[in-house]
Amino acid sequence: MGDTSDTKALGKYFTIAKISKQEYLQALKHRYYFLTNDNLRIEKQDGVIELPCKNKTVTFEDTEASEEFGDAERYDYLGEIPDLNQYVVRYTVYRAQEILFIDKQTGNQTKMEGEPLLSPDRNYVIGTYSDVLGTFLMFYKVKQAKSFTLKELITVSPQYWTIDYSEKEAIFFSKNNYLYISITFKENYNQREYIKIGIRS
Image (cartoon, rainbow, N blue to C red; front, side):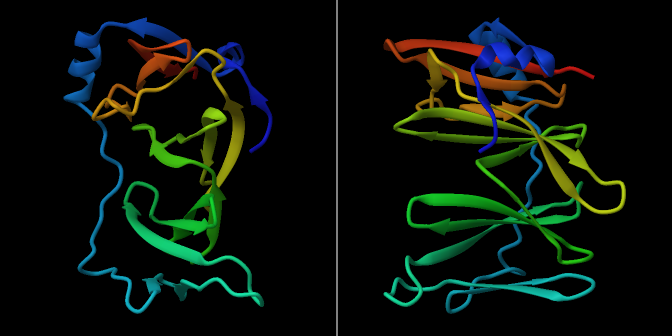
């Protein structure tokens, strides 16, 4: 998961500010939807997903747990990102998950951790992940000079707060390129607040 830091390390790359619920809800009206899902065209059949790319077809196949091959593996098609020309697939084995980006031109695969959120300017991908150990935010820089790649900038694990998933839309990018998060505090889960994270240029 790379270097893990508390939110103080955000300052090198990002700004963070507390906001009102009203501002949060107003930003939600302009949420940036980056993922499209065409399940009529891409459909898992008998545990197999086939993704047609220009240069080749990429195939993913679920496996069952066995002594020979280990834990069961599962692939789920999440959709595609037209702005990046990428398919998105979730890979799960036991309790671990990865997100796979598959280039629709070359079929090349790029891995990242956490559920992905693309910034509206298409320069950053944020991976979010929460478990019993805490909340993790993985910040990646998108590079597309010759082919699509992701460069991990930093992984943040907040010490005092966690993402409040009881909120219907707990974390999202708005079209103003700010990341909005509903949070609760580990010492008082009934205390809900809202923050926005800006990306330093």
